[in-house]
Image (cartoon, rainbow, N blue to C red; front, side, top):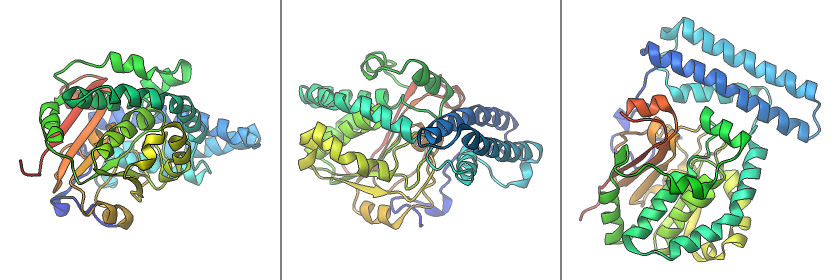
Length: 353
C-alpha cells in the first residue's frame, strides 16, 4: 500500500480535517452517532446470519460481542481522548469494522445490497434512455443530478437508513426534488465547461453505495464519459463496509448489468480495487493495482459523502478532480455552512484550457 499516485503533495496530505481528539463537541456528536449506527449493522448482520442457517441465539451472541467491544473502545476514547493520537471519523469507521469482523460479521449488509441492486437494476435502461435523449449542457446536468439522487441510498446515515428500512426511497422522486442551484458547493459551471470542451483520456471514479447510487448514478456518469471515448476505471473497496459496493460486488454484478444495459458492454470501462476497507478513504494508503490503473488518469472523481466530503474535501491532485455528493448528515453540512441534504459539486481543473 502506497500513497495515491495522483496526490499533489503526499507528505502533507490529510484525509480527514476534523480531529475528534481535539474537538470536544465533535467528539460527543460522533460517539453518539456511531453508537446509534451500530444497531443497523448488528440487526442486518443477525438477519443475514439467520437466513443462512445460524441460530438466532448464536448470531445475537456475536452481535453482543461486537457491541461490547465497540462501546468499550468509544467509552475509553471519550474518557481519555488524548491517548489515541489524532482521531477522525475515518478512525471510528476502522474501529467499527474491525470489531464487526472480529465478531464474524464480515459483510452484514450483503443481503441489503443484493436486494437494492435487484430493485434498481431494471431501472437502469430507463435512466440511460432518458440521458441519451438529451444533449450538451442539459445532458451533463442530468447526469450530475442522477449522481446526487442515487447517493441518497446510504445506510451509514440514520435518517436515510431509517427511510430505506421503513418505506424505501424513490430515485426519480428524489431526482425531481433536489435542492436548486446554487448548491452548497457549486462548481457545476466550470465542470460543464470543461466536459463540453473535449473528452478526458482516463477517469478514475471512486464509487460509494450499492443500489441506486452505483447503478443509476455513478454508472450512468461513467457510461456518459465512456461513450465519449474516456477510459473509465471504477475503483471500489477491497473489503466490504456498510452498504458500499466492494470490488467483489462490482465484479459479481457486472454480467447482470451488461444483460440489463447492453450498451455498456462495448465501452472502455474497467475495475480496480482501492485496497481499502472503509466508507471514507485515506489516499495515503492505496493498492498498487489502483495506482497502476490511475497513472495516466486526467480526471479523478470522489463520489459520495464519505469519500468526497467527510474525507478529501480539500484534496489537491495533479489532474482534474471532482468531489460530488449529497450531504446527508446535518453535522457535516453545518461544518460547510449548509444543512442536511444539501449538494456538493467541487471541481478543480488541472488540465490546460
